[in-house]
Image (cartoon, rainbow, N blue to C red; front, side):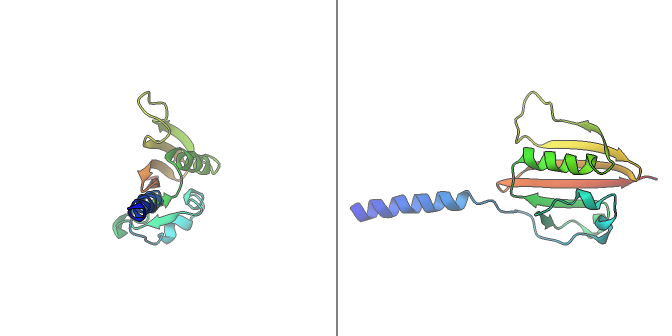
Length: 136
């Protein structure tokens, strides 16, 4: 009986440990070469999983996953944009109904066009969607 109780406790601990793992839920993909351009390259987070996006959107849309909380991913994304010439024009940071892990979005403008960054919780980490609209 004692051994059965030990096995049950170990099973619960093992399941909890696996459930706490942070793992990207997206299919891994490759970044389109357009994202190496000087105005877009700083927006690619370091140590991120690159998620697959439809090939028709790949030059203007990139999705990443990082094993960090929404707040950290959001702050890093905004800093990366603002430190590289993008001016923030809007966001939803100050909602009275959320917390640090509530999905966040920020919009920017720059000499090359407009940018929107959406960050939300995903798989114990953060999914970051970056959409670039070139200046027409």
